[in-house]
Length: 361
Ligand code: MRU
Image 1 (cartoon, helix red, strand yellow):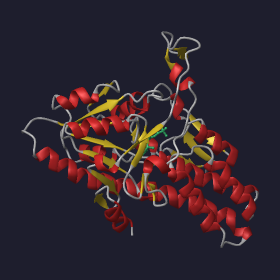
Image 2 (cartoon, rainbow, N blue to C red):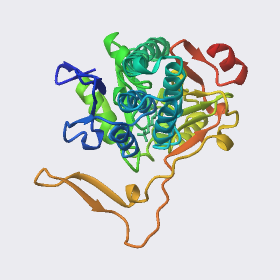
Image 3 (cartoon, rainbow, N blue to C red):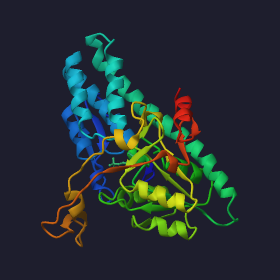
């Protein structure tokens, strides 16, 4: 997608193939900062501290982490250790372990002297496939949005609500939940996006709003508690979110607060779609509530907040009384029964075990 008129991706290899560049997303929307990651430890840190975030982007970054490891020591044991190190950075997004496993499987048959070069190519392929998959998600989602728009009175924009950031910043390019939005804009569909702020880290208010603003898409940031109210008043036509992991039967694990949006959507007859590449499905987990690990993040993300002060400096301030404990689970699980459909690169599939198994074959 374009930033200031220039086409950008969230991750790109250094020309000498000795490092990978990313956007340090912690500084957005206030500052554009690029970071050079030159080792597997650098990549782990960037993932754990959320310089890069969003399930597909974490996967692509981890793939490059494996490639960087190959430059130092590409032996099986060293690669296995690098995989464990990277996988431990964030436990919920399955794309991370999916990407490191794919790198491991792809490199094991390769002769040791050729592994570094092969690894670089395999990481690039994972990144490229993400772009292609998300563009296809966008096309399938667009068809669904066009059908919803046709059912509306002429002149009324289609009203979409999204949670967290599942736009291009969360992937290599295009995004998942926002890919249909970008394609809708290109197709000339009149559309407005309600952007959940997404406490505690505010990925909606800071990243989604910034992305949509850069693309010139009509949007309004709302407090996390506002969606249900808007749905009751007929001001939301569809909810689209991304996911960090989808179980075999279609339970959806996504940013904390997604479940409440799905409940409100069901109560108000609003379709609730989840946009995911196939790399986000975890066939080894059936019951998402019991089987998907939920990342516990620092309470400080809740007790403190950062933004620009009057002098334009990035500042952190405390919100809560000193001494009040805070709990910060980063994700929740929306049961499959609340999901209207899963939009993948292959089309739209019901959140149902049999349908998903057939769809993914
Ligand atoms: O904690 P984050 O910012 O990595 O969480 C991101 C999300 O929850 C996204 O919705 C999800 O990863 C899908 S990204 C296309």
